[in-house]
Length: 246
Image (tube, rainbow, N blue to C red; front, side, top):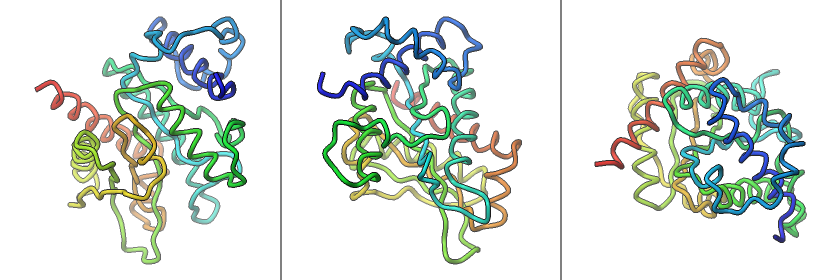
């Protein structure tokens, strides 16, 4: 394998999946502690059920040196991680096998030793998409926070790939978040987004709200409201899977 560091992350996530299936109380945040076990699984084949049976891969936007957008001392990377953990738990309680590609505050670009690029941003996005392609989840949701020049702009926006399944996933999650926010936004096609272009699984970018809007900012930062956002995202994901069974 020409991407040893990428495989290290895949193995860690595989261990997380095994633990999540074996121990119902296991949380994604414990995956880093499983790293020593991962060494004994270095020969794990790509066909291993721990990798191929993943329902949802949560791409936690930004991290480490990349704080994302901000408002005062509030950083997008922290909001993304907090809501991702709540979404992980909510989906897991619904019976889905869920993985997160970032369980703490670090940049995935630092793990990308295979792409010959001087751009930290491109290396970060490449690591995320290649990880998705190695894990082969049924879907990937990428969590982010939006910002705007005008503070009146609010609500969630879903961005999807030029694929029917991605569009359907975006519609389902958008509807759930619209109901939460009291908005009527529609998903938009993201033709130029690196993650959407290179991730093979049906993938959507979830812009969970605007940090520049006071009402959205409260929703994104208060613990109870973060749980509402997580539950809305999970409800949209569940709706998508139900539609796929029809």
